[in-house]
Length: 137
Image 1 (tube, helix red, strand yellow):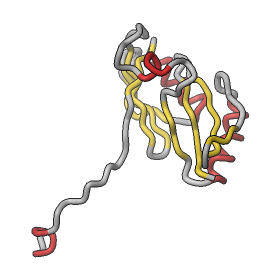
Image 2: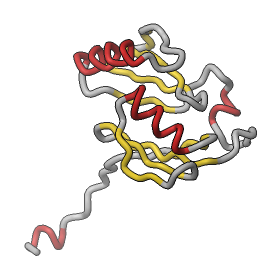
Image 3: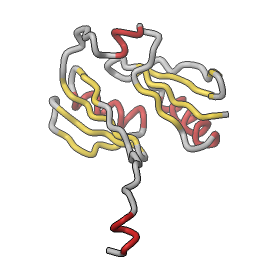
Image 4: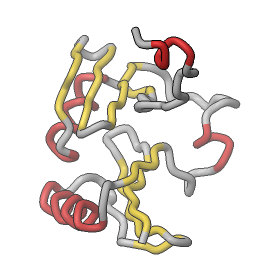
């Protein structure tokens, strides 16, 4: 270790976030993310739990209840609000992703919209979670 490394403060840098979604069946949800959204399975515990990933995004899928909870955003913000908001690296990546999803036909693929300085579109997964994909204009 150099003198500089010993005296410099550590950086405060977050690497990734891995949200957990309560799903009816983790195996079926994971298969949907693979077949319709281009993710791959990183970890598989059958119907109980799975981890799916695409690029630097990871999502934990845990079998659980969809009963209303005072802590979940969807229950507190209404059905129009999103459950996941995923940013694309570039506008060409955003456009390519949209074309890919048009081919795989995920559930309820929404139109391309503009919101503030962002271009975005939404879709729903097998368990009804609303996912937005976005890119700054």
